[in-house]
Length: 595
Image 1: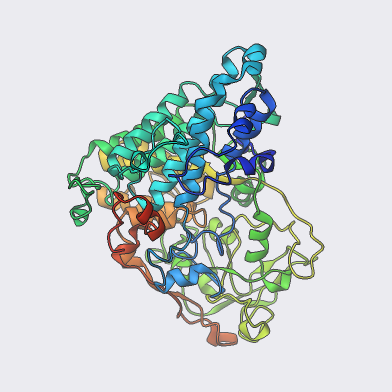
Image 2 (image 1 turned 45 degrees about the vertical axis):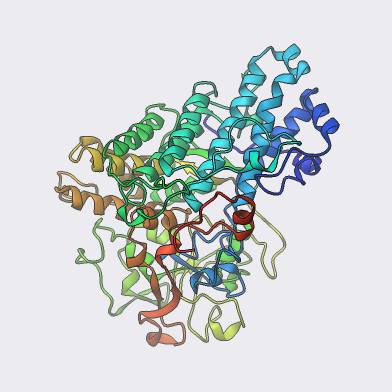
């Protein structure tokens, strides 16, 4: 059993217990008697732990709650009414922090810490299970706390490490003034926490000491190690590893918060961490049992609880993701649009980029199913066809009972003349991880496919591993081994010898580019690109104007690269600002650069 399904139940019962803890500096809830009662019985303690789990994000809402899709160079959100638009035009400040998760994650951290401090008091659990279940629950909360620190760090950079002791209700204000730790200190702390829980957590979810599908979703060893792998990959990257552009980013004592000295060993730590997940042999790349490449690529997401999924969230709003990605023809809202830059990133079926392949053409048309299809979309790799809805491609899903071509012309059924707001600004829509079984949009009957949302999967771990290994030990044979494993599953030629193989890239720089190109395609629309372009320090060169087809035209005039939107980037955008509210309360916290 290799299911990782997020355990979230009965959290509403205990919302009141934490409602007063709006920020990380807040004290213990006032209702002390109620809280103490919680930790005397097994069921209330488990409900409290469910609340700790509830802070794990559902990142399916990429138009309203998260900007990782619409504020990168891979996609654009149709509507200007959402905060993603404000972020793209630079309308953010410390007094108006968009997508502000600082207090939210610290509430999760505080909830986990309080649980850890008190679960040992549960006499009922101890009498039923001895110490084993208490140790397991404590490790779960500790793993979640480490994860919430990581989420804070990826959005805000160096953070405040609060410690293991819950704040006493009568603590003086001075005791709650804590500085930001350096990024390396944060990494070491979180990494050590994950190592500690990995030694305790089970390989698979268990209930009362026994493996159980019903308990799928509890923290496991694999989840802890996967979080560590991504954490250390980020820490080894140029943004954090010897970044002299951040020399002025210091705390009030003059300590650098970002490392000023490059340390190659950080890449080894990252490679070792990813390899530790692989070497568990607990996970495998998902492949369709019948060998169908398209079904393999779709099944990664549609076949819940499969062997590739390491950490997923069962409770989510993916059916609404489906509808936002669907065309109006299918009852959807034409809301999430890949950019031309992302479309260009997909390989051709010969495994080469559009700049390298003789198969690529931006002129002429081929007739398919009775409609003209632009030759730009011919001979592309399988992931292109499973990920992208393009003009005149065939589509079935939502409230459509048959397969029909999708049209984005200005006067077409999904064009901007047909609706005041619901039209793609690029002439494309996301198809990846969109269930054709969902029919929840306008005119639909509320049919939904419920499936887990993936937070970590083995395909990412492979790419984490080869990236780190190439930086530490160029030429290591594992680099091509695992890079080729991703390409084989995608149905494109691998690097190596043979009639259909591509030449093996030689230099470290060339391999780095191949890995980054592969990562961009394999992990498209999975909330990675935003963080990748920042940690690689390439955001300034890839952000700005993003392009698409000319959605203001009909027929052949449509097929012209045009500016679709502006996604601004400045040096301040490496991290979000800490809100002025938090700065006023935490008087020794320094602000992020540029804010």
